[in-house]
Image (cartoon, rainbow, N blue to C red; front, side, top):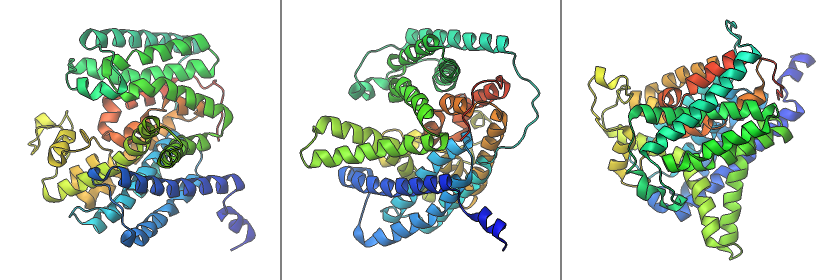
Length: 435
């Protein structure tokens, strides 16, 4: 091998820093899951020293995929792929300690293979022909229309459901919320994709009053949906916007998960030593380390256990397909899993658990993941040439949603497909920050 080829195989300095940060994040994630196992054993999250070497070896082997993130440039696929990569690493850790009776080796290998199958296309940004680009004037009208749609969605949603309650009481009242399906779709698409897109475009161009108006509008959806995501969305968008001003985009992605996880572990430690109030420390730990990070990984454990002994869905859980085919499950899978395990609330899950394990089983789950990765690659191509900072901020809610919701639901009900179309037609003259 000549020197030039050897140099090409070495990670650049910035890439080495990214790789080291990711490895630190994986180690921190394992520590977080140990803490979660100690605090919440009722969730079937376990830890034992006798299995520790195998768990460490498994996650270490999976960590080889870090090189993909160290070498790839930022794209939406990088953003979504990193969140799902961390989620799969968490599942592989939990799988090593799981008390369930399914085939753990097969499911672990399937999960790792599914991650590879998803990431290889998702980190690629193809060149797509540009058939339509809006003029600046038309784009301004589009953004104004999105704001009006958001206001209308908030008003319609409030007509059916509006209740001011604390975050701790939302589960008491949320089951009583009722609204037509079309209204639920409108609220989901507006809050997850349309308004964040308009916020990103306005904020990055310096239209502070318009961006601030959108944040207020987004907050109005909290009493409509009684959702923690709706409550935290404005703060999350502002934090991601600020982070992209100070950090490279890849570092923003990694730190957006690493920092909250570290904060939860640190606060738990301070509380254990009597240095921090229990109420605040445990609220943060439960929200971040349990709900945000552990539950998406745990869902794969639950789904693997359930569908090891029950019929596969063959995608009949998709609402558009259910009327056209026989299905062993009339209730949503989240309800089916909850009824089976009776803990953790309704267990929605990512594409790896739903379109993968539940639909086709562990043997063919990587094929399903590959198809989803190709869709994300197309989204990367649709955003090519646009300000990647705008892509990150406008898509800031989707990676977390992909960790908790089936892929088809994210594409349709949460409006990801519509957001990809907006990226495709938006003007290419916004400020750029590519790395």
